[in-house]
Amino acid sequence: MKKSLFSLLLVCGCIYGSVAQDVKTLHETAQNYLRDGDYQNAIIVLGKALEVEPTNKEFLKDLLFANYLKRDFAKAIEIGKPLVDREDSDLRSFQLLGLVYKQIAEFKECEKMYKKGLKKFPAAGVLYSEYGELLASKDTDNAIKQWEKGIDADVNFSTNYYYVTKYYAQTGELLWSMLYGEMFLNLESYTSKSNEIKVLLLDQYKKFYSSNDQKDNFFAVKSNAFTNNVARAMIRQQEQANLGITPETLTAIRTRFILDWYDKYADKHPFRLFDHQRQLLQEGYFESYNQWLFGAATNNDNYQKWQKDHSDDMSGFLNFIRQKIFKIPPGQQYRNF
Image (cartoon, rainbow, N blue to C red; front, side, top):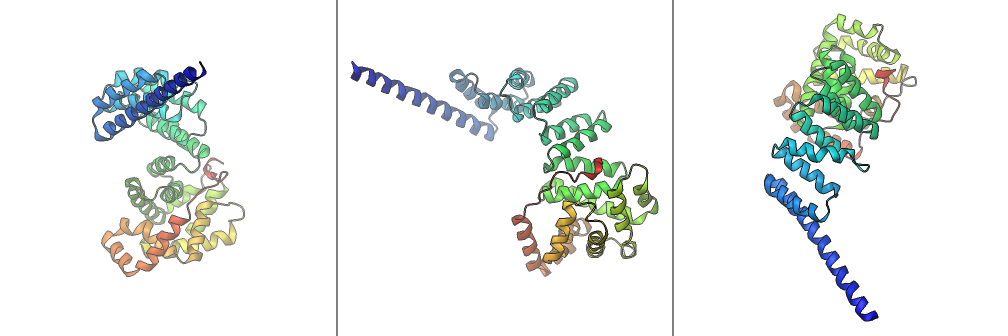
C-alpha cells in the first residue's frame, strides 16, 4: 500500500513538474514571438499558457502588450483594467495600460488610472513622468507639477529631468533649464535625448550671457537664495563670456564659477552637480567633461578632432564617469523651496 501511494505521488510530481516546464516553455516561446514582431502567434501561445495559469500576472501583462502592439486596443483594455485593479498589481501594469489609453486618446480614463497608480506607488518617478506627458498637451501647468513631484519622489529617475529641462527652456527659466539639463546628462548619458539636451544646454548658456534682461529674471520675486547665488556666481564670469560661448570659454567660465561657489556659497547650498564638477576639476577631467557636454553641439568636426588630439584625456574621463555613477541625494531640490 505504501509503495503504491509513493508511486502515485511520484507520478503526480512528474506531471506537475512537466506542466510547470511546459508553461515556462510556452511563455518563452510567446516572448520570442513578441521580439520577432509576430504578435498574433504570441497571443495564441499566451492563451495556451493562461489556460494552465489563468491568473498569472506576467502572462497577462505580455498578452496586454501583444494586443497593444497588434493595435487591438479594445482587447488590451479588457485585459489591462482588471490587471491594475488586482491587489498584487505592479508598476508595469499601469505603464502598459497607460500606453493603450494614450494611443486612443482616452484622456480621462488614463488620468484616472495614473492617479490610482500614484496612490499605490507614490515613489514611482516613471508614473509621474508619464502622467505629466499625458497632461502636457492640455494642462502644462499641471504637467510641470507632476514632473517636479517625480523628481522629489524619485530623485535619480532621469526622464523627469528631461521634461523639466525642456519646459523651463520654453518658459524662459534659463537657470533651471541649465541645472536640470546637466543633471539629466549625467543621469542619462548616451541616448538620443542626451544629444538633444546637449544642444539645448549650449543654447541656454548663450542666452544667459547675451542678455542682461535674462539675468535680471533670476532676482525676481519667485527666486530663492540658491537661485540668486548661482546667478550671482555665473554673472561674475561675464567678462570671459564676452569672448564667445565655446567649449573652451565654457571650461574657463565654469571653472571660475566652481571656485567662486565653493569659496562663498557651498556651505549654505550643498548641491551634487557642483560637487561633481569640482571633483572632475580636481581629477583633471574638467576640460574633457566640458568638451563632452558642448563639443559636438558647437561643431562636431572640431569635437572629433579634439578627441583625436586628446585621446588619453577623453579615455580617462569616460572611464571615470563609468566607474563613478552620478547619484543625487534627496533634499537638494532647491527649485521647490
